[in-house]
Amino acid sequence: MHLSKKILLITGWGGGAEPLKPLHEALEQQGHSVERINIFNALDNEVLGEQVEFARNFDVIVGWSLGGQLATLLVDQIQQQQYDEQKVLITLASNPCFVAQADWTTAMPVETFMQFKQSFEQDVITTLKRFGLLVCQGANSAKKDFLVMQKLIRPQPIALLRDGLQLLEQLKLIELYENYQGRQLHVFAEHDALVPYQVVQNIENLAAKNLSVVFIDGASHGFPCFMVEQTVQIIEDFIQQIV
Image 1 (cartoon, rainbow, N blue to C red):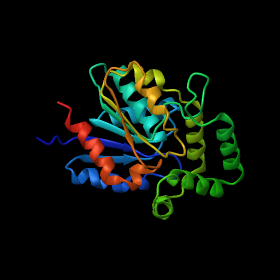
Image 2 (cartoon, one colour):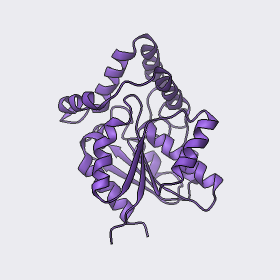
Image 3 (cartoon, rainbow, N blue to C red):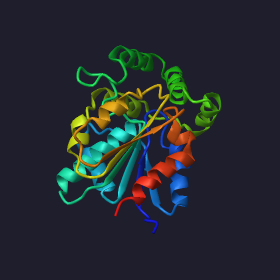
């Protein structure tokens, strides 16, 4: 029996919620009820609280890249505030700790991130373009993917992008993965230029209760935008196991 779920999709940093539109539509074709939101400033408690209330209406919370970190924060807050509610968490190309730390080295080196942040302050447009290339880099279809992405991304408020960079720099969610009681799936790409694939090993080693990991061969960071059928299949397989 096919289970129809209410799914919340949270996009990644930089281009608005449009890049996940193909995934959104493909999940709806599977019979799910789907809503899609942009990133938000989770460091602001009021904003976070509003998003938690909104997210409580869904069964499954899926986030891509920074969106995966935001999804993790939301399910954790829902579990803490409403002890009887555990949502299904699915992250796509998302590192619980985006910038490397002493105890989590499989992440973007601090210097690389700081240079990126600096170039963002100096030249937003060029930096966003470079970021778009990184999202597509690694797949055989990188050039084609980049053209697709150019059509999907929308200009974003600078303040929101700045908030997003702060989130990427500060969020450390490893303990949240370990302490989450609900079911969680983390999907990674072999050729991800932003989240090192070695992170898979670290996550599999976590002492988490209901944690699964899937690894996509030949994929770039942008797989939720460009490998839609495969991404839907992975999400479907995971959702349909839920009794």
